[in-house]
Image (cartoon, rainbow, N blue to C red; front, side):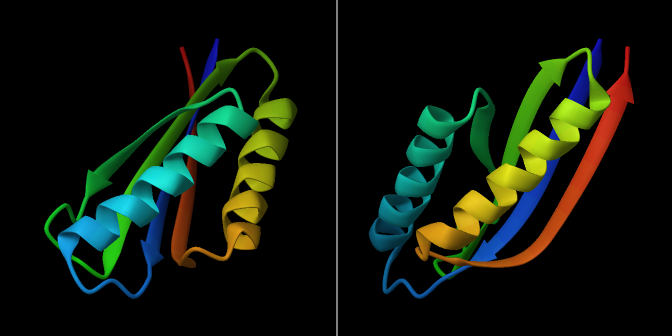
Length: 94
């Protein structure tokens, strides 16, 4: 079993934490429906202009998981709701 994780740092313009929640919720909902991944906001909870999102997928083929995370990265970029500042991928064999 291979656990693939993606930690994505994003930035956007929001006037309040309510605006931020709206953007983050849209990104998370759209990625969950398009990909078979678990997703959550994991850091920068009180920063109104940025967030750190975590995505996790489990499988038995590393190449498939790498492709899935790369496609997820491109998907978020094409949503044009935010700008990706950093993206870190990790693979753990269990």
